[in-house]
Image (cartoon, rainbow, N blue to C red; front, side, top):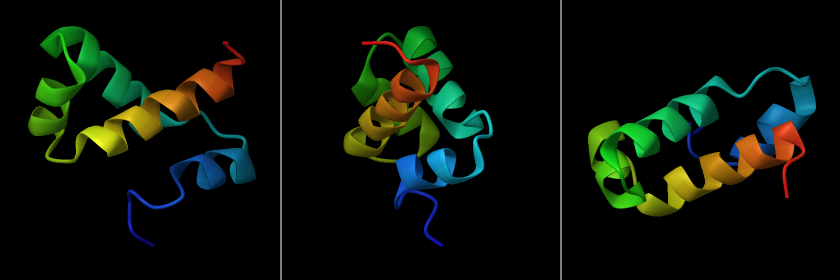
Length: 62
């Protein structure tokens, strides 16, 4: 499976803490922007945004 595909579905399926989403969140906080975090993580801005959405959903934040 592609690491970036259906990130939310995988997290929801197994009820595990979405570690890639936490990693993305920490990287955004450290780098100061989604764009720089994406570069640091070697992925796209949309993937980082999806990871942040997964984390938000996992935590039940709105």
